[in-house]
Length: 100
Image 1 (tube, one colour):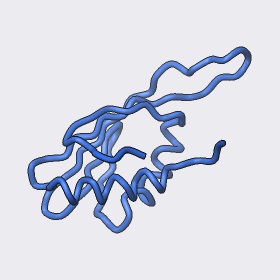
Image 2 (image 1 turned 90 degrees about the horizontal axis):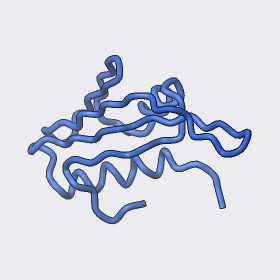
Image 3 (image 1 turned 60 degrees about the horizontal axis):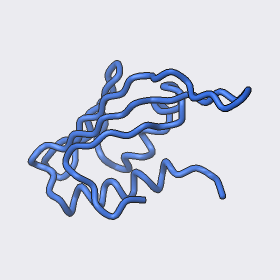
Image 4 (image 1 turned 120 degrees about the horizontal axis):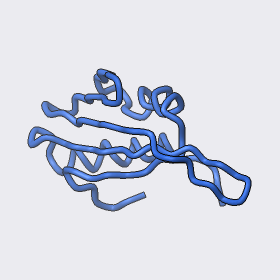
């Protein structure tokens, strides 16, 4: 988990678009969510987070094939630094998967 989240950044997720769309409502907590094709808007403290995504070619490791999505996060000026940090900490915890 990061300690600071800028107003605009990109990530890669190891999931299908269907999985992402199922996980997203829980990950935004009680914030209003509007889903569109390849995009979403989340209302946060008088501002908005705009999310967009697109499928990437799967990652192949020997015979293993892992799905991937490219994600773009864009917080507008209405979402202050503290609100952005608070939202992303919860978001990342919700999307954390098993491991190590």
